[in-house]
Amino acid sequence: MGAVCSGLIIFVQLWRTEEKGPVFVTMFNPLSTILVAVLAYFIVGEKLYMGSIIGAVIVIVGLYLLSWGKEGDQEAKIKSEEESNTAHDEGVPAP
Picture 1: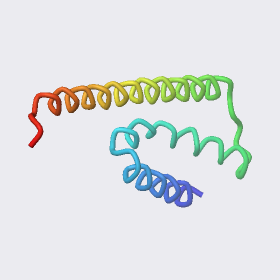
Picture 2: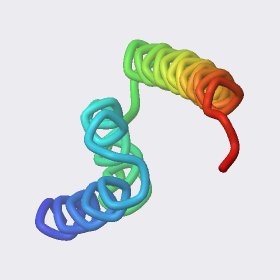
Picture 3: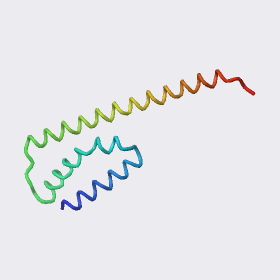
Picture 4: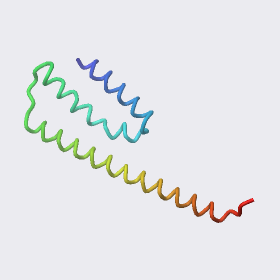
């Protein structure tokens, strides 16, 4: 069971590295622990305790907040680059 979960996690990490970069992969490393716990509950029948569920919710909320902040940083960076390109283009005389 552990090998299947690890293989799935590695596949998802490599896929996301190509799509979004290494920051998002390292950000979601704690999610692998939650995935293993959920799969163990459904497949093996292990018990989930209230502390585990609360911890999982806190991790998911933290990941959401981090990705929300990262998205805002990227939008600000793109806007700043567009403004600098526009200012640079206005200063160059046309041939």
